[in-house]
Each structure stands twice: as C-alpha cells, then as structure tokens.
Amino acid sequence: MIKNLFLPVCLFISIQINAQLPEDAIRMGWTIPSGTARQQAIGGAMGSLGGELSALFVNPAGLGMYKTGEFVLSPGISFLKGKSEFRGTKAATDRSSKFTFGTSGAVWGYSDRNSRWAGKAFSIGVNRTANFNNTIRYNGLNNYSSFTEPIANEFFDFYTQQKQSNPSLANKIIIDNALNSPDISLQTKMALFTYLVDIDTTNGQNTIFSRAERVVDLNQENTITTKGGITEVAFGFAGNMDNKLFLGGSIGVPIVNYERTLVYRESDIVNTQNNFNYSRFEEEYTSKGIGINAKLGLIFKPADFVRIGLAMHTPSMYGLKDNFSSKLVTDVEQLFAPASGVDSVGSTAFSGGQDPGIKYDLLTPWKFMLSGSYVFREAEDITTQKGFITADVEYATYKSSQFSAADESVGNDYYKDVNSAVKQIYKNAFNFRVGGELKFKTLMTRLGFARYGKPYNDKNLKARKMNISGGVGYRNKGVFVDLTYIHSLNKDVNFPYRLDPPRSNTFADLRESNGNVLVTVGLKF
Image (cartoon, rainbow, N blue to C red; front, side, top):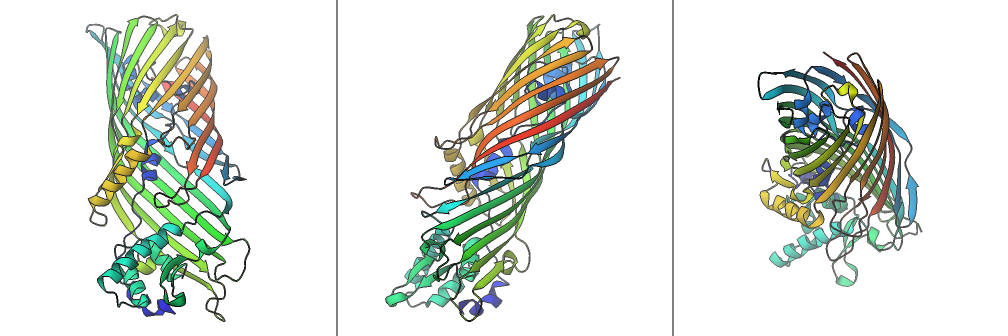
C-alpha cells in the first residue's frame, strides 16, 4: 500500500494549514449587536435619541444627555431554530436555548449651569456585539459536484509540475512528494492518504481522479455547530453644549471567542462495489483574539422636539489566532480486500503531532450612521415627555474588510488574493432601524423594526437579517425595569465547498426564526 512508504516522513513535515477565507471576514463584520432591553425594543435605533447606556455602542454623543449617574444590568435568553434547503431537500435543526446578555455598565453624568458646556458624562460598559451560537444542518443529492473536486484539481496541478520537472518520477514518489510539500493543503494530503484521491493507471495512462466524483449520485450532508461571540468593553465620554449640541466618543475593546464543529459527509446512495462507500470530514476550529475600535458622534437639536444624529464607527483592528484539528475517514470498500476499506487520518499526522494554528490581523468594515428622532412634548423634565419615534440609516462597507499576516506561516501574497476575493464577493449595504415609545406616567410600551441588508454581490444569493421587537418598561423613583422580546427572521447561505472557476458552486439556503428575551434592570444615583 502506498501510504506505508511515506507515513514515517509525514510525522515530521510542515504543512500549509487552512488559512482565512472570505467567509471569515463577513462573519466578523455582518453582525447585529445586542443592547439594553429598551434600545432593542425600539429596533436598536439609538443614533439620535440619547440618554441611554446603549448609546455608548451606537452614538456616544447620546451620553451627553445624562445629568446624573446610572447603573444598568441586562441579562437575557435566546431561543434558536433554523431551517435549510439544499438541492431541493429541506431540513430543520432542533430548538435550543442559550443565555445571553445585553448592554450593562454605568454612566457618571453631571451638569454645570455656569458653563456653555451644560453637562458632561463618562461611561464604561460591556455588550455582546455578536452572537455566534447556532446550528446549521442540511443534506441533499448531488450529481454535479463533490467537495473532492478542488482537492483533485490541486493534486493534478502538483502532479503536472512534478512530471514536467522530471518525467521519470514514479507515481508513488510524486504522492510522497505531495504529502511532504508545504504548498499542498491539508485536505488534499488527507485525501491522498486515505485513497479518496488517487492515480488511475488503467491502459498505461495516468489519470488523477477522486473516487467520489465517479459516483453518479452523492448524498451530501453537512452539520455545523458554532458557539461563542464578540464581547466588547467600551469607555466613552460626551459633552453637552447649551442643550443643543452633544458631542461624544468611545474606545471599544472587542474580545473574540469563536468555536465551530463541522461534520461533512458524502456517500454513494446506490452502494455498488465501485471502491467508494463514503467519506467524512470532521473539523474542530477555534478563533480567539482581541481588537480595538473607536466610535465618534454628534447629536444636534434644531428644535426642542427634533434630534438629528451623526455617527462613525471605525473598523475593529483585530489580532487573531486560529487553531483547528481535523480528521478524514474514507471507505473504499473492497479496494484492499480482504483488508477493511475504511481508513482515516488526522491533521496531527502532518504537523508533528501538534494541532495546526495561525496568527493574522483583520480589519472589519467602516460604518456610518444618520439618525433622526421626534420627541412628543419634549422638556427638560423627562417625566413630562409622552414618547418618541426614532430611526437610523446605517451604511456598512463590507467589501473593505482586510486580512494581513501576523506571522510567517502564511505570506502576504495569500492574503492579497483573499482580500481581492472579498472585494469581488461582497458589497457595501444599508441597514435600517426604526422604533417608538409611548409613555403613560410610570409605564411605557415600545415597538421596533430593524433590517440589515445583504452583503453578497451575487444576485442569486438571498440574504438579510431582520428583527421585529416589542417591550414594556417601568420607571419610578430612580428605579427602572424593561422587558423586551425580539424575534429574528434571518436568511443566509452556506457553501459546503468552493469549486474552481468557471464551475458553478452549490450552496444551501438558510432560514432562522429565533427569539430573544431581554431584561434590563437599572438604578439611578
């Protein structure tokens, strides 16, 4: 058997690990931050309203409306449910629940009647700016492509180069060279090791092939479970000039903790003796790191009952480290009879017994926001106000996300190609948020809506994120309690693998119908 010739060598060679893909950029950039229960009840529209701790993460100028101190805590729980459709087959995931939290922290505000700067405020807060908890599951029949197609293509290119440099090289030596090469991807090495990709020498002709591609109908199954999120700690300051102009800024420190478990399987539904029964690829992937960003904003009151807000969010500059371990299992049936046709190999076999890892830097999109609010019966004494309507329009530059090297494991040339792909695959998009509140002395009712536009450039990809929300609130004698329910109706796509151009890719359409209950308890001091 071929692998016996090079297995001892593989334990000491380095490999080209799986580096970043364009999908990693959109995962970090296309997010819906949480907030306080009040802010989430009005669709998250806080760009011009102010007087809320969540302004720290939207438009920090709104902190300038504070004249006293406030402490806020916002626990919550999410209910997750997803559906998918892949090549005409529908599937669903089991409902699950996860603890979450919204904006929590404190504001210290004070007023100065002897200065044009009528008030100033400092704030520190923490918020869940991205929630990665999710499960994706889909399956379907495919007679067009296999995830092994680009793997076989990669080995074909390597084989051709080896033969051009030395036509007399034996096939076993070329496979050995591929498994030792740092320029060959991990999946290709695993496919060669388990005979999923091989060389056919029939009739004296050498043909590179994948056993899965020779199957008429493949049953393809993919299950992806993700956990974690982005937790951001922020520090903000704002000032109030003549109760007309509010200026503010904040520095955010986002902390990333992302975990993904993937199990992808292809099998022969006919189950004839064609030397292929199934292959299963498993991967455990983690991404952890820390970043920094800034948010700047202003709110202007041209009239007592009108507020106009402008805000800018700089990209988050992340330093990230990814680690992963993977395994490939292949059943080639009777290929080596009477021995079992099931063979497997793990990623550590090609990395000296260590799980591969990589360090890199990432810049997320810019965001620019224009907001407006109309306050009913606006007055300095907020207890006399009767409510408001408010809206945000946000522009996000998804195609501006950029990767760069942080170590020597992957060069900048690779990241140039990935960044070029990001610009081609994604587009900039608008996000909209609108909401309102009616106040009845100590009780309030709220409604909101938010829609986050599609970041994909391809018209055939249907995607958006949408929240419908409502809640109630109670405020009396410096104590307030808010309760909100947010219902998310999201559409997205998932590519189980990418084919080499000009071949068309296959993908799954995803739908999520999630609920989130959020409670905010606050105390003024």
